[in-house]
Image (cartoon, rainbow, N blue to C red; front, side, top):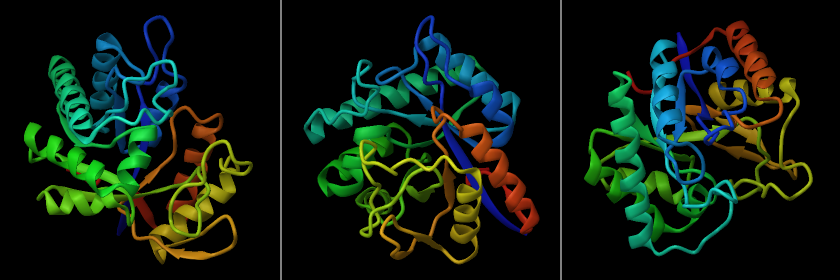
Length: 253
């Protein structure tokens, strides 16, 4: 049977503010990218999120971002590659420790927000991320935008590179994501997300915002956990995948 990973970014609360819809999303995903305290999250929430993931049989990934709580890690801070390597290593190590407290372990890394987008397009930044991950644990996989510099850097570093596609974001013709402040950047129609999931898994294609048909080979599909309709999208996706004989399963065993 054909399988595909479904991932979401979780643990993105802070202090007295809980993560938006984590309890509703855990039964719908196979991998969880957990915020590591820089753009969201704190030690208590990191431990709780890892425990919840383990209880649901969901694979845990570290979701490091820029040190930007005020901007939710979605602002470009212009950090140097050396600084970025430190940010990534620090956060991956922190989540690994919190996961250990929960009796679980981190299996992969996926950068967040502005850092993810920058690593997708800038080879020097991508290498800094990949080398930091390898230094912390060469057994970790690195998840990145399909066709991006980050996926290439992961392979060059000897890491398992996992290309992902987005079900809730519009694409540009060059394969990059449409910026969030552009009208139509967010996909909130469950049927549209489900259609994209089937096309990505079955024939490795998706339709860009201008109608261009892109070739996009993926091993994981993402729905952002803070999305207004994240649960509805994931339910529709799972239902459609089941109808097509496609089973959700984590890329890491």
